[in-house]
Every structure is written in structure tokens, then in C-alpha cells.
Amino acid sequence: MADNRVFIFDTTLRDGEQVPGCKLNTSEKIELALQLEHLGVDIIEAGFPISSPGDFESVSKIAGIIKNATVCGLSRAVQKDIEVAGEALKGAQRPRIHTGIGTSDYHIKGKFNSRREDILQRAIQCVKWARNFTDDVEFYAEDAGRTDNDYLAQVIEAVIAAGATTVNIPDTTGYCLPHQYGEKIAYLINNVKNIDKAVISCHCHNDLGLATANSISGVINGARQIECTINGLGERAGNTALEEVVMILKQHKGLGLYTNVNSKMLNPISRLVSETMRMPVQPNKAIVGANAFSHSSGIHQDGFLKDAITYEIINPEEVGAEQSKIVLTARSGRSALAYRLQKLGFQFNRNDIDVLYGMFLKIADAKKEVVEEDLMEMAKQYQLEA
Ligand code: KIV
Ligand code: ZN
Image 1 (spheres, rainbow, N blue to C red):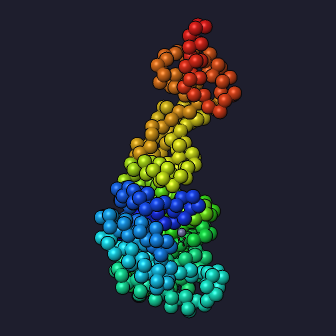
Image 2: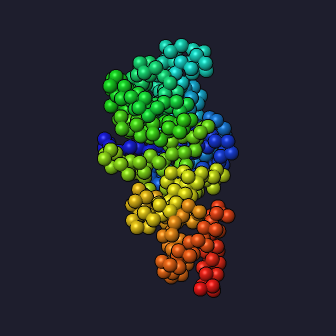
């Protein structure tokens, strides 16, 4: 395993599907799983097999179809859950069981009415049990973000000794600041015996809008797997957006980290997920939003038209997006107007553009956006009057 490869663990079909209104049927899950494999993700979390017969069916069908990626099923630290996950994954080329338990005192006391020692034993038992079904066992320490670091280190050391090959450190409630999450990962690396026997995974939620930043901080500090979803779908405010972490690592080559994801598929798969899950993508969403490559203010448009690099750090082609757009609003300038008129086949000189710009501003002040039809009409009127 290359040290600087970051594994992409896609959980669109599990954490993403937990979003109200995003429920998928088996054929929709299979279609998305095939596209995720094509995208180049390393692990597909296909579902939570014990949660419903439908999800069991989806996970086992996906397990039988996916050839290259690891197929993962979620379970709680409950023997029956693990057995059902093992059963659903039976046909997989590379099956992974993802099992775990809450480790913060909020969970230990509030959810389980238990004690740290007992939770530690359950963590060890669930990993040992899961190892009866596969050698690829990932343990999650739910709410690790709010778990005391000493206790977390104790749990992680024990589950690695019990056979966990990946250890997931979820910031389940999206609470951590990036430096705190990074320090947590560094703490585990420095304090857990045999930590190098397992891959450390980041699973960050977006309650404070920090999921992506926290995941990146995690890998900078030594984690080598990111759990994420297409379009950042996930419980509450969502999960880390796959397209964002992939492009951050690609843009910041100085970090020396990379993924196997084919970035040209990011926009097509974002649209597919949005349509299949009936969940629109916000226009200003990084990488895949409708405005991610649109320029509307005069200063930006002028710079962009002279040299795209002035206002674009990514070439839209690299992420499979449509060409950059010059949108005309009352904040747009003369160069943008001239450019758009030229695209419609009109050749005007500087003086013409000065007059046309006055006409344009009147329309733009009255409308949110000046569209092609407005430009055609305006240009024809100008030609008639000239
Ligand atoms: O957010 C979380 O902690 C989870 C776990 C089940 C991994 O989704
Ligand atoms: Zn989650």
C-alpha cells in the first residue's frame, strides 16, 4: 500500500440514503453502485443489511455485481447485526463489515446507560465476531469527535488487537474544529500501539460546515481513508462531499496525497445522484453546483476573459462540468457584454459597445439576468436605429 494514497470510502448508499426523501430502491442502488465503481472509489458502503429486508437485498445484490471495489455493510455492535451483514456480503469479491459503537460519554451514558469498561468489551467482541465472516473489518468509534482522547486510544488499540483492519474516527455530530480533528488523529498515531496495522479513517459530518475541512485535516495528520458522499449528502447537514476532497487533494499536490477517483466523472455522477435521490444540488456548491464555473461581476468577467486562471482554479473539463459561463447581470461589464454579443454573431466596435452598454444596464436593472433573447432584441434594435 502506497503511503500517500487516500482511500475513498463512499457512503452515499448508506449515510447519504439516510437523508429524508432520499430512500433508494434496489435497482436504483445497483445503478449508483456501478457508477461509483466506475468513478474509482475504493469502498462502497452499500447499506445497513439488518435495517430492512429491502436493504439486505440491495447489499447482497451489489455484493454479487461489484468486482473491483470493496463492498461494505454497516452493523451495530450486536451479534445479530454482524451475522446479517456477513450473510448479505457473502457473494462479494471483497467484503467488509463496518461495525462499532458510541465511545463518547454522551453515548455511553445517554444512549447505553453503560460504563466505559463495558463499552470497551463490546467493541472488542464485535470486531472478533465480525472477523468470523471476513478479514476486512472496520470499527467505528461513534462520536469519536467528542470522545476523550485517552479512552479513544484505549478502544482503538484494543480493536486493532482484536482484528480491526480499518479504524473509523467519526466526528458524528460535526463538532470538531479542523485543528482539533487533526490533533485527534495525530494523538492516535502517537499513542496507539500497532496503529500502523490499521488504516485510519475520517468520517466527518457537516453540522458546522466543517466536514470537508476536518477530513482534509485528518489526512494531513496521517489518516488514509475518507468517508464521504456524492454532493455531501448525509444525516442532518450532511457528510463530507466526495467531489470536494478529491479535488482538494488534486489541486494541492504539495500535500503529496492522491486518490484513484476519475475527476471527469464528478459532475455526471453528481447529477445522477441528485436526480435518483430527488435532492437538488445548491447552485453555489463547490465543484458540482450550477454556478461553480459561472462569472457574473464585471471585474471577474474581465479578468476571466483575458486569462481564465485569474478567476478559475479548476478547468471545468477536469471535473466533467459544462464550459464556464459568462452570466449577464447589472453587475456585469462591457467586456462581458461584448463577448456575449460576439458569441451571438454580432461584431460591434468600442463606440457601439458603449451605447449598447447603456441599453443593457436598463434591462439588467429591471431583471435578475439578461438572457440571449434580451441581447438579440437589444442588438437588433440598436442596428435598426444606427
Ligand atoms: O456518523 C457516524 O458516526 C456514522 C457511523 C455509523 C460510522 O455514520
Ligand atoms: Zn455518519
